[in-house]
Length: 509
Image 1 (cartoon, rainbow, N blue to C red):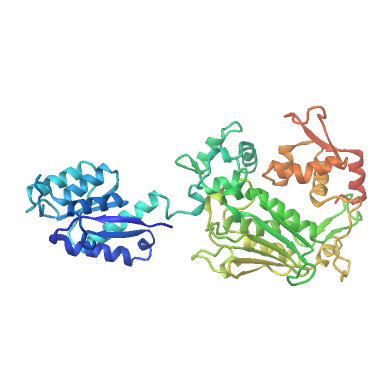
Image 2: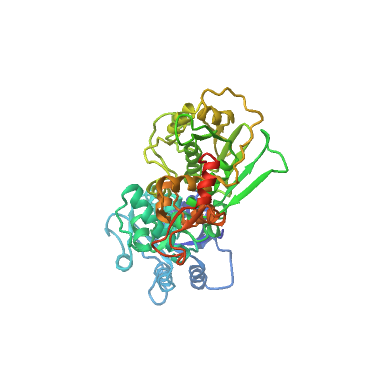
């Protein structure tokens, strides 16, 4: 990162102490010295050129001009103009950033020409007055920090609210935004109309900064979010044992929006967990249960994606072992929260508030800080170990596995153990997402794409098509109601006879 040069006027003895104090402060401050170097004319070595040529050349090379105006106008050249005024005029002509500080509360004993210079500067920009060196340093610090913020070199607000460098509105997916509006309206009574434009949505959600998409906008609705935020992917690995060992039996790296990341990682995990099917002894519909509540897994994933530190080069990592599920993210707890507080009701302190707001509207998370407490309650109800939260170069959520708990949930009278923990085969083979779609259509009959997404809590249309609808269509398990017009707005899907048979054969799994 290159540093910007600050030219401090002038060589007057009257303000020598203040100029030296400015240089010492900027070069000694841990933040400012990363961005600025300070030039004082008296630091120039001897050279074979006129003084006025030398100081004006330094003004031309500088990035900022700091003018310190006192009472004395100082030395005047043959044209009757002081070096201080020459420097100010040169900085003005060169369109440099000018920061002017005037010593003294009023003109008082100020020279007439210096009063005129102060008034000239005041007619062009905002000046700050100071009466002591400490006051000057404080005012200069505030001005330089504001300069860095204006140029987006530092930020004081949340990362997700900052504009995403290089991204434009063309990098956002209009279809995804339109789909989000419909989902949010059904899930949370979102006030925007279905026909609202993409720009109206972005404005309503505060996802624009001076017309540019923020990091949150790209993560939520970007066509290729990882093009701008490379580490925003999710890495998933499945190990047969209880330790990391190579070769890894199953490894996937998922990319896409935050909605897609959660959906894809959830599908990866649930497809590896034990799934038990009970009998129809007590009901016409056989009970079905995973060894781990899907709501708990989803909550852990959403927390990792929503609250992670997106300035880190690390990615969210999902590791499924024989005895546990670990979800790690490069993040940390805010100062107001502790690990112990996560085990009871607590205030919601999102690290990425704009991201969290949209995930809430899509019903991926709740707003009141009850997510971790709910995870604990669900694990207790399922007779699973309580979730463990820890800090290990990031934040880790660990969920204990008990493969036999799936069978206990659907057949309480059954006595484990079930050894070894093996996921029962589904015949004919269908993935968990397809099985879930078949059960949904069996209960509801014909449903549109939007209705299916709303019932399943899926925000991304592409993910639904690739993991649910297309595989089910390819296996002949479902069929479109308007087969001649695949993209018809009236299109719905229903079970085929084969789908009914598969559903019956798998006890509606």
